Amino acid sequence: MDTDRDFNPPVGIAQDVGAGVRRILAPNPSPMTYRGTNTYLLGERQVAIIDPGPEDSTHLKAILTALRPDQQVTHILITHAHLDHSPLAQRLSRETGAHVYAYGAADAGRSEVMQQLADGGLVGGGEGVDAGFCPDVGLDDGAVIEGEGWRLTAHWTPGHFGNHLCFSMGGTVFSGDLVMGWASSLVSPPDGDLTDFMASCRKLQKLGAAVFQSGHGAPITDPAARLNWLIEHRTAREASILEHLAQGPSTAQSLAKTIYTDTPSALIPAATRNVLAHLVDLYGKNRVAPVSELTADTPFSLV
Image (cartoon, rainbow, N blue to C red):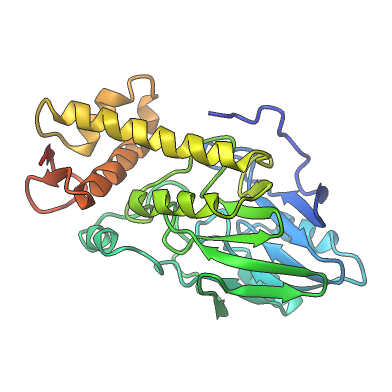
């Protein structure tokens, strides 16, 4: 894991990160958000804002203060509807008159098996869901959004979250929380889906980007290497789960406690969600099966 130890920019100050992009760090550091959420501004006269961040008046002021008198926010783009990325969009839209663009509402893009888990009572973990989020404009995979001097392509990349989008602009990809440098992305059912996550990582491999500007942490200057690491990391975790299931059926929680031996007890629930994501993915591959009706607590066995 790359911890990005040198990444510690000032909070609330717009910084040039190249390619006509500025970044403002939101004041919401945590174990799940690292230094805080990265909000991106691009454009000279017509400005697009990517991920305005959490509902925070100080951050809203920082975004508006970063605008020059000749600049107008024309687009507000959301990578996904977690509470650290999308809630400020509504107030920013009221302040600027700009429309909010995203793949869809908070529950959009969820796979059938994850909807089954949600219907069974499993609720989202991790960063928390902006449940009321709904964009003004829905973006399909491959949609193009443009303003004066900039042009973005939206890429539907579920895995971390069902409605997750990445945005590409030349050699730059705004990768949201799908790919980060400081940590592997959280995949927490029913919001996260490992089958989708792996497919989305492979989708990004085809873009041949020069840099990823992620939702948290420093720019990723070798996207190909980072994507390879994420795929290999998940493949190794899968192998470990299968090895333990060879000894007999087990639940996600029991597997997490057995596999994540160096993980603090407070983080075992997150590890359990991660293992559950792998089990559901393996179920889809017909490698494992639940011994009873599929729920978050169901034991799984090898097929």
